[in-house]
Length: 519
Image (cartoon, rainbow, N blue to C red):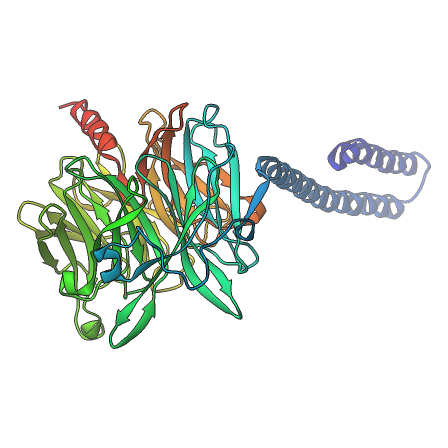
């Protein structure tokens, strides 16, 4: 029997006993003094009972709250998929000291990207793509975990599987991405080399979840050799119909070099992007491609002037057909996050340090507007389906780095949206959130948010602007970046949206949604 139920039986009985005692005193010829004393005792008992009742109700509420917490935790545990660890040591790496042959290109050598190990990644299917044709990838890791990623069904939100890679070190990878055809997964990681740790990039077979290649970036920068860590990955189809994958290296304001790979040509490098190419120091590695696949947008930051001047950040707009570079200046201090309208007319750039959003006219390559991001330290942004709203991810970049809110920019008035709860608190384990991704199905109408210091992916319902689901990670690991991928039964596939934004197909779908709006 619950606490409250027991109290509802006992309390009336006690009050009844007290009333009988008063009645007995009044009929026995006792003095008025005795009667008053009995009444006082009754009043005192009633007061004690009221206090006790309040305490018990509070305890009952605490019990109810605890029961709800237990139910939520049980649901979370039930949703965890077992983690499989793929041991790198089981596979045969390239002979130590041997130079890879047939993979290097002039561009890979120029940018310092090296193939340091190859493996046989063939084998049985590691998960059922027929049961889960549309999935979401996001990285996994933590201080006590090996680098890995997990795969989530994009509709049921079921954790399909996960994979971790024991290369002798534990780390928290800052990205995962997928080739445009869904065949390869790219993951930031590290490995033990003697008593040292080496930053590496893993290329993984998405079907078997086995490592296929290990890459390492190392090049001369400001007079000395520098090894950069992979930070973000963007997959796209370029203006000529070629599958391309961008590996984006660096952390903070010293991004690059970056590399365009051909996933269908053994993941060989077709273009390196270096400081010599952009003419300026590259900033945070947050690269995107416009809806046509012709222009690559790269963040720039003039670090030497960073403390003395405002809005000295820029964007290098690279024509991938001609390699011509156009620099668009005055987009804040620390550009992080770039979003494009589906018609290709405008681009929005997020300033992670000044907490502003800039609007670029793509025809003139000029800044035509700026507004508050509505959150502190925004890191990335994504639009809704009809492009009336831009959601900024309040990470707290360059500040507290513990943000857990999404800002909403009204793109019609180009200012933080009014008349709603803004920013939107995500709750759960949301902490240092970083990327948001528009679900590829407009009927679903969701944004999925990665959670760099939390232990779940957070799903926001765009119709209500409320959290719809928390998708737990195996072992309570954190997530960073992501990709929606659709697979056919024969394992051919396509990326629908990732770190760089929607695919061409989704941009077309977004134009259809916009065209259907009431005029």
